[in-house]
Amino acid sequence: MTRHGQVIGLAPDKVAEYRRLLAAVWPAVLARIAASNIRNYSIFLKEPENLLFAFFEYHGTDFDADMAAIAADATTREWWALCGPCQRPFETRRPGEWWAEMDEVFHVD
Image 1: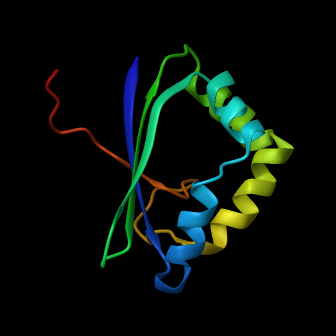
Image 2: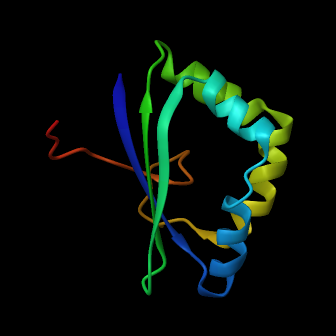
């Protein structure tokens, strides 16, 4: 199992819309996430800075293939088309990222 943290900005005028979307994530999107071996997935919002922080655990053996399966899923891409305009990716993110991956610098069980 590996832990992942990600961060992205949220447009100030889209906070209510984004909260509404995440309050009713489509079941097919959740099923695709689970099928790609993601567990313990949470997204947090820090206001007034409007930063989104995501955390999840990956329980599979081929992270890249599982992430590609999510990205190839038509329903997930429709979902992203709704959520994407709310988000503000960082200019400093790595090539190919939308949400910026974060390095884990501390963990305790």
